[in-house]
Amino acid sequence: MNIRGSICALVTPFAANGALDLTAFGRLLDYQIGGGTQALVVAGSTGEAHMLEHHEFDRLLAFALEHVGGRVPVIAGTGEAGTAKTVALTRRAQALGADAALVVTPYYVRPTQEGLFRHFTAVADEGGLPVILYNVPGRTGCDLLPDTVARLREHTAIIGIKEARGDRERISALAELVRADFVYLSGDDGSAGEAMLAGAAGTVSVVANLVPQAFRALCDAATGGDQAATGRCHAALEPLLRALDCAPNPIAVKAGMPALGLGLGLPRLPLVELNDGPDRARLHEALSSLASLATVAG
Image 1 (cartoon, rainbow, N blue to C red):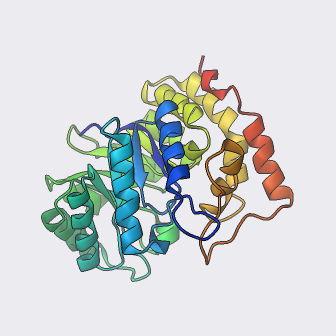
Image 2: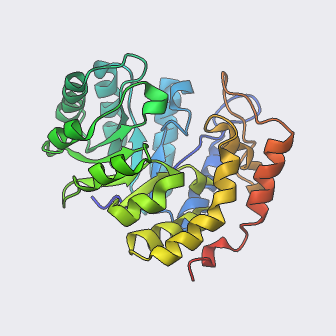
């Protein structure tokens, strides 16, 4: 399965009454594919997966699969705090037709490395889908270490890892694990260029929701080994990346959606809308400055 390059961790649009806004979601899917996004993650952490009811997860994923129609891979976020729940959700995603499962490390419970190994092995054995490991210690409270990843990559159903730690030591360690049947994907927009230059096959991105063409340009430059073009792309994106850091994801990225005609940008509680002060102003200023970013790599 060719999951690489610019991959968008999609937000989930909600209507004013709190229901799924599938009309806006369809526009977002078209915006991504038209902007060169090469794969899509539905119901990941950026998609407020843990605020979705079971029937909403099914409806959102089914809609995405039908709307995309095989043009790019559709990856379902299926990670839960418990192994049995993760297996069950992965099976549901498989039944709906997802191409792969993005499985975050169990959050809050802080398992040991052996617990993580057994957890992911069970999901790979029983879930019915190719599995992409997802490590994001800042959100989950546990860190999937490279030695454990090296053990897990021996499972034929485990095809890669999304690593959100962007420090150089972790980037280097994960790059060493890359092989034909196991990909390393960056999960940190800020260090994505560095990770891809080091050997990551692509990036699962938040900022791509807003600027898919610009992020595709960064991915093309970095995976092609062009350091100069990668630097130009990153420099152009940096003000927007800084603006998105003002609030927990996906609060800020959702605040940028209405200006693009991609929904109301409303998160679900306990997340709240971005304030109308300097943070929102910086976000819109950064977005305005990126109108022609798709050509920056040239």
